[in-house]
Image 1 (spheres, rainbow, N blue to C red):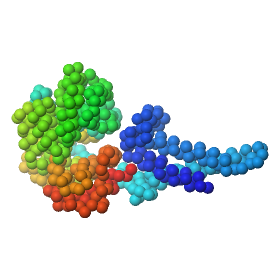
Image 2: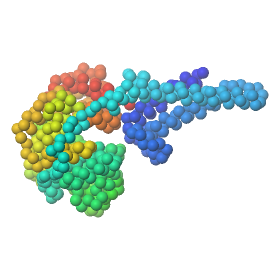
Image 3: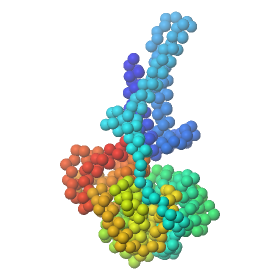
Length: 509
């Protein structure tokens, strides 16, 4: 019957795509009427690590196919007189076609979503073991006895904010739920007095968990969040009300009447940095006592332009930049200028360079020492107020805080130099941008490589795919490109090969 074939096709094309994207964990807004359907999906479907709106659409499509199939089956049975036998035959025919529609629609759905038919084999079933079952180095392989009970040993002046900040502070990108709250509380008990969060970390779960963790401790903690919503950063040109509502949403989730710092986050454009509406919103919120200081963060090739404008404006109290051994050599000048000219607080991020995870596979003998060496090197710069690192296991509280207050040694530098040799040709240094002018497609190469790092090295597969899905232009353009970018990377990355591999990993949806 033609309808059954059509049901299979619709299942493959429509609900197959919905299910595919649901497994990625995209925001509800990635689906039709996502914002409207999210409350319904949250009520009728249990949380399962997938986008529930997408699953709701899958169920709706399959039910629609089943219902239409029932009426198609009934209509196909012609009966002259209305008798009990004729009604029974029509009912059975409708039920049969309905069941067939459901089975074939589901087969089409799962063949695309799980087996990857029609999508170059990129289904979830073949890669599930690699993504979710692979052994990933998320932390040092040994929880050393001497680390246990580590506490913050050093505090530094946080620029013109006047806050005495712990030299190692809590990044909460992976903090959520009861376990995240437990990790956060232990870090705070051990002397950490600053944490960095955002509405889009763990789907707003980070702010909620941190709100619970700081109960009774609010006056002892410096809180930094972002002008952001659970769906992403507030764009340039947004209304004052949009910025204001974003910050007030953070206050509700954190359970506090004020935050200490709000960032214009991941900023690579002067327009967003100096958006008059953002600054008007900040001034109003500051006057109302809802926020105290303004900051910006950047880890893009436009950092010099953005940071120079931020410093010259005098508007920003804090800057947060990617900073680690082997990074762009001029970064030290930017940090020094910010401190010297504006007395800005400086937060170093991306301090582990992705090395805490799969990158340690060939670095086993130094694995236990890498975090210590990396942190001590960053903190050897007296202009750095503190470093932020993502805590997502209890071991991190002991391991990371063990480096607090310690000076860098020649052995530490030797470890970092060895690691740099190990990852040469695969790690993309923030702020570099040497390859960008050679790309005829204006592909955001650094962003693609960063999302690949999230997927491969951090074990944050869904987050890497979610962010990649939001790019206006993806690395599929590299397949037919003549690759003028080859040879443009100062650290020897084979850009085209890495781009193609990134697209295969990150475009499962």
